[in-house]
Image (cartoon, rainbow, N blue to C red):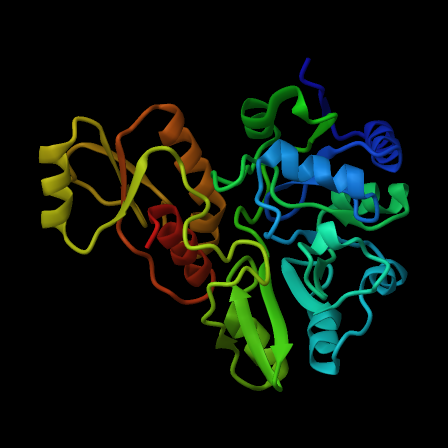
Amino acid sequence: MINLIPATPENVKKAAKVIRRGGIVAFPTETVYGLGANAFDERAVGRIYEVKRRPSFDPLIVHVATHEQLERVALTIPPELKKLTDAFWPGPLTVVVPKNPQLPAITTAGLETVAVRMPDHPVALFLIQEANLPIAAPSANPFGYVSPTTARQVAETLGDAVDLILDAGSTPIGVESTIVTLRNDKILLLRPGGLSVEEIERVLGRKVEELKSEDPLAPGMLKRHYSPKSRVVILESWEKYYRLRALYRRVLLVLPKRMCGVEGDVIFLSERGDLREMASNLFRILYAADRKRYEVIAFFPVPERGLGKAIMNRLRKAAGI
C-alpha cells in the first residue's frame, strides 16, 4: 500500500519518527522531492540505494537544518565555501567538503568528502529538525530517471517501496541544487542547478570553473542522467525537427516560449520565456511526455545564462550527450 499523506505538522512529526527508526521517507524540498534516511544509519542508507537501484559509487547529498548538524557531517568548511553557505543557505546550494570520519562510507560512496546542503523548504527543514539528525537524500526517483517535482510522481515510480511520502504540492524550483567545491584554490562547479553561477561569482568576486571529470565526485555527474524512456533530442534547426517527424509517429516539440503557427504536438517550457518558469516545468514536462509514450521529446535549446545553464545540463544528460 502506498503511504502518501499531506505534509501537515502532525504527519511531518510522524515521518521524523520513521527516519529515526531506520525508515525512508520521500519529502519535498525547494528543488525536487528527496528520498531521505538517517545519514548515520548504514542499513537505512543502503535501502535508499536499493529502492532507487542507484550504483554504490554515486554519493548522496546530506541535508542539514542547523550548523550543529553540519559539524556532525563535515570536518571543515573552507572559508570561501563558508562565505557561500552564509549567503545562500537555506537554499539550492550544495558544497562538497572534507567529511567527518564518523559519517559512514556508504553515505559518501567511499569518498573522503561529503556533499551537504540546507534546503529552503519549510517541510524539509521541519522534518530534519524533528528527526534531530542529518538526512541523506538523493532525488526520490529510480536512478537515472526524471527527478520528481510532485509527490504523485514519487508514488507512481517508487510506490510502496517508500515507507512514507509527504505531499506538499509541486516543488518551486524544479531542478536540483547547484554543487560546488574548492580544489587547489579554485572554486569548481560540479553540477549547475537552482542557484546560478553568476550569483555565486558575485558573492565570491571571482570566476567559478567547471570540473572536467568522469569520476562522480558529487550526484548528477554521470554522462546520462535525468532520462525518460522516450528519446530526448536537442534541436539545432527546424530541419532536424521535421526529419524527426518524418521518422517517428509520435514526436513532442518543446519550445522555450510560446510561438504560433508550429505544426505537430507542441508544448512550451514557459509562456513568457522566463528561465525560472522553464526550470520549474522541465522535469514535469519530461515525466508527462514519457507517461504519454512519446517516441521522441525534441527541445530547442535555451539561453545558457542563469538557470539556463542548469536546464541545458539536464537536457544534455537526458539526451546522453
